[in-house]
Image 1 (tube, one colour):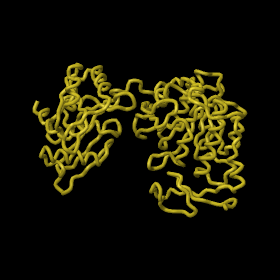
Image 2 (cartoon, one colour):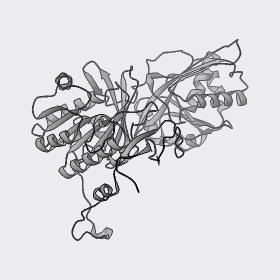
Image 3 (tube, rainbow, N blue to C red):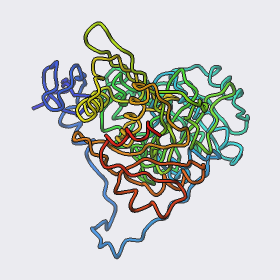
Image 4 (cartoon, helix red, strand yellow):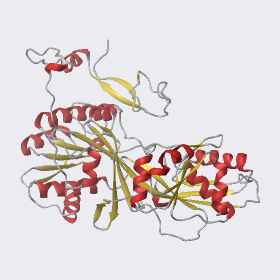
Length: 459
């Protein structure tokens, strides 16, 4: 039988528990993921798990249950509303994660400023466990937040924070961050599995019972996932990642979980001197300036969320006289590049693997799908042959290991965007070309094998 103040070790990645510390988790295979936590006695556990059931609560047929429609509050930031599915749902719990310095606090402060202008009578509470009151106030004033019903509170103890929430009764609140907030009921260090789980559970119960829209800021690990137990992401309603190059000018807001909308939406922002500004029409935002007659560059079209974006893929192939060729990539997986180079060598008989190869996606974009394989190969051939490609040509298609060019999804949506932006030519799979050639103003060239790209350099 467990004794009071007994300790167990819990994996922060998968929740696996053991009585002794282990270097590697036998369940999820992660290293150094076990954290020590204290669990309660049997009597305490019984008291904690006692649930007061409502009178007459019984299982119901689906025909007897009335569906509930959610009333959403517009934030005044179109890109944020797009990601959340149309606005904020009262009583929802939204977790926002991102790298240090990426702009999470700036985004939330601007969001609160918009909400205070739209709903000046609604109370707003900003709880900061990492910054002082003066720091938060200075940033808030700089970003245009008025004095209306905006409260700033510097505290890390959940019990004190809970008292202020009940006193102020805000409509919107921010907890920055969940890893620094601790509960007096748990004798563990801040940021441990038990602390995060307990604070999130109590916060969730209060905001849902009182209709408060709450934003939780979460730290991330060096692998890019939100620090703490995976149950944290299961408990909240929405999980949003704020991504981008810390030293670049763009940021992307991506939802990976949303109980009140889909997870196929992406919001794009630009970091400027006066804060984050949304990019309302980002179709060509990631394209560099038109450089005529420049070898080693091609254009492609990817789907980010529900809208197409045009990206520029640059390649540099340099002769290497010292043995193994070097591979350097920015925005594309290095292993994927190695596969595409092998396809070029096998089916085009070009001695490319011995060369130094550099591939870059302009604007800091990260290509996670295979829709741009054809564009990468076109850029490599363009640099290898020192021959430029047309600026009005889009390359779109996945390339297999046998050299075949495959179709991509959501093609019709991308084709409409190409027509609106007056692109002249599209190189894609033969299957898509046969289906859409007569339906579009864009000249669609269908190729079955990647070797047919040779003809484009002869024109």
